[in-house]
Image (cartoon, rainbow, N blue to C red; front, side, top):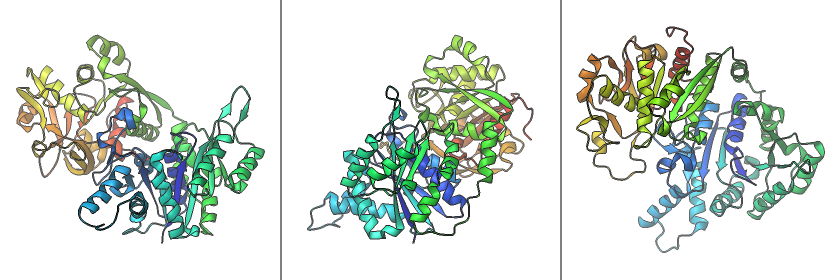
Length: 536
């Protein structure tokens, strides 16, 4: 039977429950344990697929095609193992399941209530990952903050699970904030005391307190927290602000978080964690020998979490190339021809980001035209690849009105068009082409050299595709389809001849980049931006 760790948050949101969960999982995995993490989100959306990135950051897509919370990206990047639809549960999905069962007659004669029906479904979902897998430990992160109305059913379900599974098989970790009052020059524990009180009112006594702080926690403050929050002093863990999220596993190791958890779970005589590869990555990340400046052209640049996986993939690829990647956000809505000449001239490379809709398209086209004409390394992802095709058809092939039907439904030259199997779909949620699909690569292409193989599997999230009616004329002019889906013939990758590095991909390579396996396309793009010559 697997052991369970539940991670809750208090005082304020965005404290980093996902990073703490992933860091603890990494330490336990490094000791030889089989670990997975799941995220329970209290919002009523069935999934974040229809949410604006400004609302909830990027929408992360799993191998099996689930649109999930961005924290699953952290889980995969830290553990180097894929997640699935079962790793992310929302209130919307919980209620949808219960209501569908009620409509099917599963509760005939009974009143359907939050307790026991909703909490039973939460409990079922919490233990679902154990079935068919051989996990030693399952970590469950509860989204939101203790005290939120929408979190109450989850806390009640955890309370019940601790009894169902046995206290020796469960650990409750509460992440909280220790604010520093500059005027008083002291750290304050009262918010944490109140947060723990809220948790106690829900029937949960935390076993471990993880305290986010800007300053080190003195011994007397830890003792005070232990006394007022009913935990032993060794279970008060300092989580001081880190230079990078990849420092957090080592900081938690220093604080003995993993040892404390294992002791409370009765798991003795475990080997010390093997973090050689992790430390090697950190060494490269923090001691770069060169620097490269990449322009990130997108329309959600005000919120870094909107392109979280891209930023992390740059860190991984930078460490692999032993260089610092400095990312310059460029808002596509304000990028016209004159702006492009000024803002793009000094950059080593340009990545045109994914997205949806008409807003910011003109700026993306201007950026692509500039890098194509001036031989600056280019990498386009999803909509970025589609924009590269539109720009090439307009300015090289001279096809007036070449466009995507997403941007202009009435275009007479739909070089990017709605996928055939999408034309009768009207529902928005979970209906795109989602998840991992195969792609066959042309030998000796940039992509083939980067991957080192001719068949790959990459994750997708799109409704529109390249219109193959324009393929022959486009390839004659020098833009080559170097990656295609072997079953449908859908163009997955385009590359430009006679250019140092010009690659556009329909899929989302950033979603598969991890600390231990930086994505080869990001690695090759950074190498090209460093002007190191040909890909080895």
